Length: 158
Image (cartoon, rainbow, N blue to C red):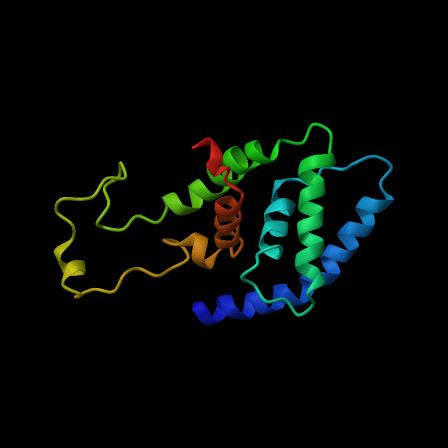
């Protein structure tokens, strides 16, 4: 499963730069600012991820620039804070991570008093599958989105 994810990631990295260049060209040709939509912005978050190595360095800088333009210059676009909290965290990431429920955590999110004994003794392997961990195997943008949300969080208001 991990090997398949790595191959997919490699393929996506190869297509990211030309895709972003075309996207930027289309936006420049538009008469008025265009909202790209949440799914495109999630992809831009992944392309702007500083932990990823891209075949061409301009991939990251162009993705960052497009993301910033979307959140600042498009009328009726959500504010960066609203996009972060409502769209990225609640609408996108929460459903992905809520499917991943270790035996040591109850349904309400608290520590389980009586976790599965077999798992604690190492008698069974944790379930590493796309069904249980979609954030790791299905949507490869999720981890980058978490990183972006952490970096962009306004800690001064806490």
